[in-house]
Amino acid sequence: MTGCCGTGEKGHAGDQSSLERVDLLSNERIAEGVGLMILHAPHTASLVEPGQFVHLRVGRGRDFILRRPFSVHRAHGEQIEILYQVLGTGTLAMAELGCSDDIDLIGPLGHGWDVPENIDHALIVTGGLGAAPLGGLAEKLAAQGVAVTVAMGAPTQERLVGRDVFEAVTRRVVIATDDGSEGEKGFVTGPVARLLDEGSYDMVYACGPEVMQREIASMCAKADVPCQVSLERLMACGIGVCLSCVVSTKDGLKRACVDGPVFDAGEVCWDASEIPPKH
Amino acid sequence: MTVATDLSVTIGSLKLRNPVVTASGTFASGREYANFVDLSRLGAVVTKGVSLKPWAGNASPRIAETSCGMLNSIGLQNPGLDVFTQKDLGWLETQDVPVIVNVSGHTVEEYAEVCRKLDGDRRVDAFEINISCPNVDSGGMVFGTSCPEAASVVSACREATSKTLIVKLSPNVTDITEIARAVVDAGADCVSLINTLLGMAVDADTRRPKLARVVGGLSGPAIKPVALRMVWQVANAVEVPIIGMGGIADAQDAIEFMLAGATAVAVGTANFVDPTSTMRIVDGLTEYAHSRELHKITELIGALEV
Ligand SMILES: Cc1cc2nc3c(=O)[nH]c(=O)nc-3n(C[C@H](O)[C@H](O)[C@H](O)COP(=O)(O)OP(=O)(O)OC[C@H]3O[C@@H](n4cnc5c(N)ncnc54)[C@H](O)[C@@H]3O)c2cc1C
Ligand SMILES: Cc1cc2nc3c(=O)[nH]c(=O)nc-3n(C[C@H](O)[C@H](O)[C@H](O)COP(=O)(O)O)c2cc1C
Ligand code: FES
Image 1: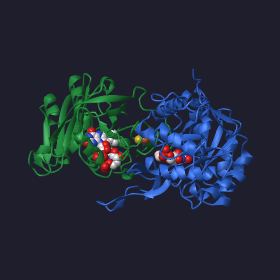
Image 2: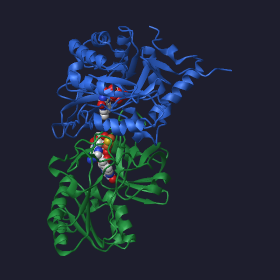
Image 3: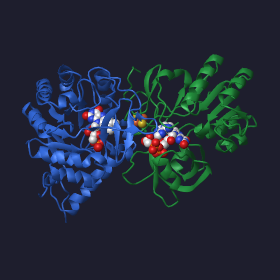
Image 4: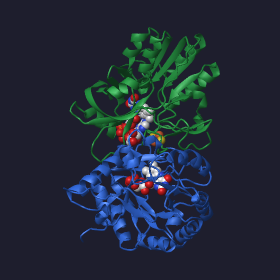
């Protein structure tokens, strides 16, 4: 690929993505400013891989018009779960949605987490809502017999979202909170540094604020452990067309919506990378 | 029994099966939409802007949502003519749809060179010359906001190709009819309008602009009234057909543009919201024509009763 990606080789939104009318089964507030949505979305649920996302249409009006991208937290049967943080217009409207509302999504989209065949022990690192794309991955790894350790970071104990999913698949869940309300006081990078020192991991999977992912990426590079990260970019189309979501990589600009959102941390040019507005 | 309406329209030497085309930069070359759109039901595909050499585009963030619209400052990132010819035209050739190549350049010569190189390529049906992109420092809108500059680009492209030449106009001018006349005099077969309106968004929390480039182009429903007004003005000023665009999201919008004087309509930002927008609009137009017992869709063009 050249320095400027156009419609690159990886091409398009998975050939399997489609526009799907979905039913909202439940929409609960699970922590301060965090909601969990369960959607009946048979097409997406049957195809989605951990780390992939959906492009959700929240409102029918014309006052805010773009779709919002959300990772699929977990998929079971014909249902998908979305863990979301309430930030602005779109997510505020999401929190108000009820079962009779008209919702559609494009999904499944993007390139999810790579799980190489020969890994024995994986470290999952989450920062806040970064747990969202990692729930399904933890379940998949455990089902394949991979030992999983999870390092979770959040501002407070209440905001340790997704925790039950991780605790259901592994007893090795290490916690750090900014205010010390549970686990170690401080950022998740503290426990991660120790885990990398002590353990022998074949792969680190990280998602959270971009500054955190950057830090984890550099710690993994030093420890010589491969690392994957899931990056957030502003997205208009979500299917590889508009080039609003570009990520600087060693191979030039790539599109977070089709080439990502999951990238090999070593491939990302962190200096040039952009932190989305509100994280 | 009612007879099916003839939906076809003509732009220069190009006949479109219906008036609905894609707006450049919102549809790439169409491949990504194959799951959502039957390309053979489109009037034409207008490709993403193509330049002679690869362009890297602008820094991120490149978009910002605004009330009823969005700003973009993508900056015409594209892999250049060679990659485009190989990959995109190669794919489009297998699709049953006319292809309009949107051309960008930093200099008059660059625009003309793209037209010259593709002039003999039978996979290309027409060119749309973008002299109206607000997101590049040299070229782009610089050409589209001055009559002599606009005319010089169009004359050079006219000499470089005998294919249908569409010129895409900028709304960021005092009098769009002057530019329209200048490009028609220089040889344009058709004008398309509007490109995005120059705009800006600010984040009050961070005190920073929402776009890395600070300013960008506004598109979507927010610009529709401005676009309609300009289409109407241009329709009264020049004789060539017009491709109208700016905030078109449904068939009703498309009909409004045709009544104001557009021969065809392009759908842009709406593709992001609903990737099936173009199909909905084709269906809606068909239904409208049927219910009004139109023989030809062209009966709508400029039929505004003032
Ligand atoms: C691939 C991907 C997966 C994501 N998964 C999740 C998830 O599982 N849970 C979750 O809570 N959030 C997730 N996000 C972030 C989520 O998309 C934004 O928080 C959301 O779009 C904010 O919308 P808003 O209308 O509330 O905010 P506003 O600030 O009002 O939105 C304005 C515009 O900016 C965009 N935007 C704002 N913040 C972000 C951001 N951080 N990333 C991308 N776009 C943004 C919006 O989509 C909208 O177009 C994900 C983002 C991406 C790119
Ligand atoms: C993300 C984006 C990229 C665009 N890229 C191009 C381009 O490459 N060339 C061009 O002539 N116009 C480009 N445009 C302008 C559109 O083709 C169209 O003129 C404009 O968006 C108004 O129509 P809309 O409101 O339906 O989107 C772009 C618009 C958007 C939103
Ligand atoms: S290319 Fe449009 S969001 Fe990625």
